[in-house]
Length: 487
Image (cartoon, rainbow, N blue to C red; front, top):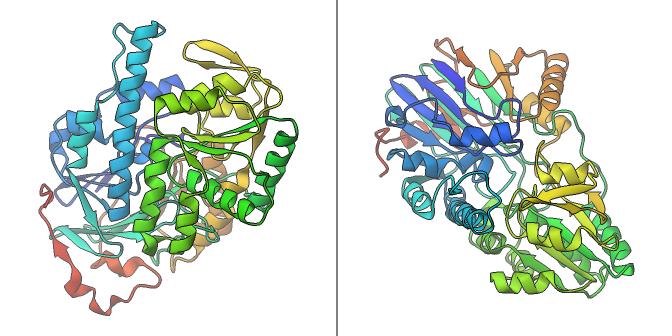
């Protein structure tokens, strides 16, 4: 068997892993690179593996750094199955369409205003490409084992993080290969805790916060303080926000603050069509999170929905006090850019960063208190206060990750640390080696490693890899699908 790292190495984006063995070529995740230009340019390069040689794709979850390259894959002719949970399928339906429309709009904007170096500027992919990719999604239930051929099967285990997020556990050639995906937090108020594995021979684990511990501060209290200080100045709080997960967390806490009278009665706007659609999905996936129907409904009504471009422009012309929640979380695109242009130059306002900011993004520049940021070809001065709220993260920190790993019954033969900036990945490697005494590697871009295949005690049914699974009825539960079948 061979594992090749096509992304998420020395960065938190572009998640793609090619697993070859048992007569199959499988892609685990198919994400976009984001951040610095040298990373973004990889999205325009040919995939290092011909698409017609791929037998299947398995998604951990719907965030674009894990799913956003699927439309390119479809445009290049891929027509095989893309396995995922039903929650991931529903989120991809929202996110890939939105991503395609955004790229088409930004290319059109660049062409009309002439600030692109490319003539004409082209989108990475179109809405048609996204629709073609969505037709290939094959939903699978959590914990439902599925055979791809006589020597390979897989299952998806709950990973927390966002709706539908999963760890992927494969049994191939007598070995268990596990991909953590993005791990959620054990005490998240919305998502349930990630389910630990019992065993894996080879493990790929994320390291987004491999060098950090999350603050124990109450996020509601932090937001309450930011709102109060900004509103006293008559200012506007602009929150660049990931539409999936983070936007719903913000709305959850705003609903709490409003209900308990801890927040002034000011307008709150959700200026993200994608976040609006995603929030509605929470009421359709009540089995995947901790919210009651009443709480899910409260989140849906915590803000005034901004639906059209004209309505968004009207909000940008308003004066404070008010709150604007808009995509995207790292300020790489979307409607939040227009709000940053409008409100960043005014010292009365606040820009609240509520998620991880990858190197090279506008969000990272804001977090570093850059005096200006470049938007639509021009530099916008930043006089607004910039605040970062780390306690809202949907990623496990290093202590939470170590606890998830430590629940395994035995050490893997090899553990690969991915999906982290270099310092974070190396810090997690060191902590795992020192705490758990496992052999760890931090792979580089396009690195390939051989995974020796031999019998493993738990390898027959990958469904036995979860700590709390009832394995008594699993042998008869396997379902077989041809690797090129989307049925």
